[in-house]
Length: 337
Image: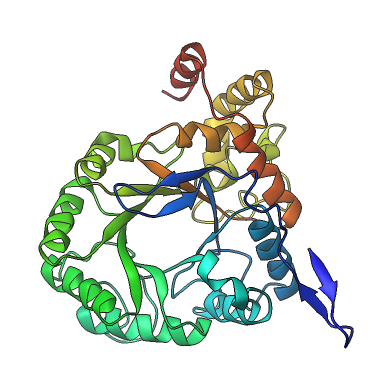
């Protein structure tokens, strides 16, 4: 929703109905409730993108009750630009709504040259949180993640840095991402000893990528930690986009590392069968794929990206049908196995 002030400048006024249709789930055993669908700013918010389009997407998201915006230090491109653009939009549109938002950032992947701009050292994490806060114009983030495991840095050092970031008031909660279940359990033990609120594990999870079911979800439940799933649509594979071939402007056609022609061709029969199941449920394939992940009690939220407000609204329709019959689940499992 938008209005014009006396100077004629467009001013954002959030919808008064923004909390009426969103589903909110508790995150592990914490006091935090997250929207069932959250917005990730991995793509479409960098300097190479149209900032007005990004602004429209963020406004649309919040108007529909999506209170959680997920960023990382190296989102862009170039690195840092998604946070900087988000900070610009936040200042213009969302400053008065800050206490209604749950904002995340992360560090753990390549960010700047040299030995201190990658992985999980204390030096990298402490510098990164300061840089992220400056780019976004924030005093704190609601949650700060270590983005990926570091095989060469002691887990105690990485978790200790996260703990100090909370103690310094730069984050309210901490999380980890892409950790296997054994290291997740160890991280939980360390953070519990340090009395730091560890509430989320961000993991890749989709119908075609079910690794979290091999032990991670159980570990999270045992430790009172929630899961937030990214890449729920398998980089666009679990959508209607590839049902009749590979469009020239699609990710697969561009042969990007996370989705290529071979991936599409090897999964197309399953995609077509799943689309039929979705149609019988009164959903698009993408909507069913999101709902299928949310059936897991450990999953607090599903992260989606969006290139437009219309795409965002289409994915939000997943919330219209979150229930599956036992026959549907059995058929889906048979197809994807």
